[in-house]
Amino acid sequence: MNQKDWVEYFEAVNGRKPSMQEFQEAREKGEFVVEQKDASAQTSNNQAHSREAAVAPTSFAQEQSYQKILQPVPGKRKPKLSFNKPTTFGLAVVAIVTAITLIWIFFFTGTKSLDGIWLSNTDSMPVVYELNGKKKKVNTTHLIEKTIEGKEAKDEFIQKLSKLNLPNMQTLKDVDKKFHLSTKEVVIFKTEGLVFYNLLQSNGTNVIFFDDLADLAYCTSNLSEFKKRAVFQKIEYPDVLVGKWKNVSNTDDHLVFQITKNGASNTDVTAIYPLVDTDRINNKSGNSHSSDDEINAEFEEVQKEIKNQGYTVNSAKEVYKEAYTHSYIVPVDGGKKVIVLDKDYNFKSMVEKVQ
Image 1 (cartoon, rainbow, N blue to C red):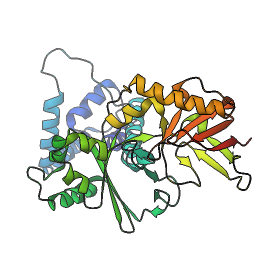
Image 2 (image 1 turned 180 degrees about the horizontal axis):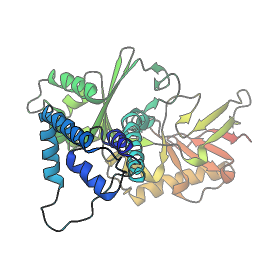
Image 3 (image 1 turned 180 degrees about the vertical axis):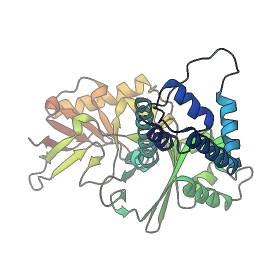
């Protein structure tokens, strides 16, 4: 390329004019062809460059500082990186990928990760967020009217926290320290008359407070109670229960309903978990340490009633429970049917998978 083309290319890549040193180095490397001009024109051109440098002292000072950092100590000449087209293209690709990644993290790791069933303990009702549809809901009936994220959500949470007048608890860091948390993000959902404060944790759990942060105030002196009431884990329906089902236990009401990972489409809000995971959910330990004797005792009662219904179940790992009601959910006949027993092991209903 000629001198003019090289200068235009340099300005497009670097967003500034080349310094005299950069110009001379590029010339010595043969990155452009020097146009033949008479001596007077060349002298005039050099003077013009000098005048341009003189009227831009700030830019020149910045370039000197920049060169002072990047230029090696005078000595043996070393090869330098040339910002040619392939390198520029590679840098552009990296920049685009980085930007896309940051956008994805900002927009999709907050509310999107909250979608689903959240359960604090097996004696309680779950909190279910439906955030993927056009109408975002909490527990199927409460429409989310406003979602607050980022700094605005943290500021609003801290403002609400300050109204409790709790000693040594005025910031989000104070809350984390008090309850052994590691909050990475705050998301607030507002429905008509209800507010849900979500403190997403780095371990995947979610601390949920309602309206006036009553649980936070109540549990300031009881860490175990705080974990039981306020720390929620995401629960998914087991694969064996996912699909379309028909109630076949009542001839007057052959209800057909759909079950997804987030529960049944036309039933009350509920959470289903494996029988063997009871202690893991309640203790927030990350491990399942339910008493073998307790689990086996429950399983034997379930197995006995399932046999009375003409089916078999061979392992406690095949038995599920419903939070709050403590009903037993037992897939039978190779997963084609499901028998439901109440908390006292009495038969409640049976559903059959619709092909």
